[in-house]
Image 1 (cartoon, helix red, strand yellow):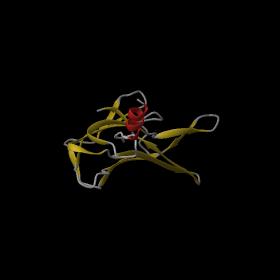
Image 2: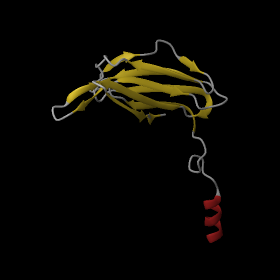
Image 3: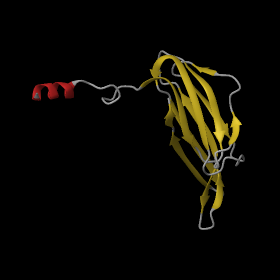
Length: 149
């Protein structure tokens, strides 16, 4: 019995041994911030947002079917796609929310839906926020999270 358990422990499990996670589509939630608050009086500090979507697969295309921007209250602010967009192997695409566009608020987010004809490496989807006021600058990133496949 011990030998069986030992053999089972030595069998690599997909996704648990550092191998790539393959998928043929996902719905991803990406937290973003069109502004954050500073100081005791919670003064807004506006930020530009860049949503970056990177196809990490060296052989397969992925198709974006939705890139939607939501505000703090969960209301749709903007659809970024009218038709699906193909991203070729190792290519990337970006969507920008201008620093002066504060409609999203401090709890804004994107929902990104992608699909592929066959299982491929899951893309890297992240947001980069950056802003500058009175000689002070701030920047940070945020990672996507799968919410449905």
